[in-house]
Length: 288
Image 1 (cartoon, rainbow, N blue to C red):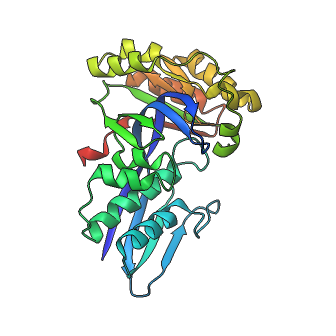
Image 2 (cartoon, one colour):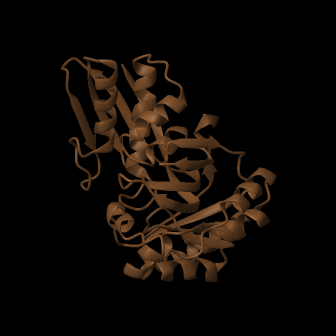
């Protein structure tokens, strides 16, 4: 049996961390959405009781360091599955970019194997399992605009975003999420984004209320080490984006535009400064 799951990239419209748990995990307060830049994950059963992972990217491991591998291993252990699995990942999402590519691939595996093995698990259960892999996996199980709290496992779907276009720009650097998170000093964090205001704007479907309440409390930490992030953010705003900020721990920066024509101009202008630029729309995986 063989199935293919879409694994969309995610961005953080709002990202805040409130405190650190005793085990070092962060307490998150985030608003996330998915975009139509996606990997494709092919899942098939094989006779031998083993896990095989292959990607078309030379930057990713194909062993248990790979989050998709971990997703297979987790379900096999939890539900005592003896059949083997082969995973083939067509990478489109940039690696180590703050776009959740690895987490989305793992979430796609959880959803796909849930169907393939007829486990009949709901999304909430899959999300709770996904937290054992990475804090972004629970959101990626849903891959729709959502309020994400706790350690990442509390995912509350929100209303669809109003019409908007997004320009993603990834500078030619890679950022280690654990390294950035180790630098978080809660006494020195800048102003926290207004997540409640952002949620109210989404509920009202009002982009004029969404845009001023966006923010990422980690941006200053990553940008201090990688000034390219601030430069690209400023270029996005100069070229006409209504708002711009870093996604996740970076380094990808995104600009939000109300009109497609303006987004296209921003995209065209930025391509002269940054090699990896994408023009995307928000997407809800549940619309499939």
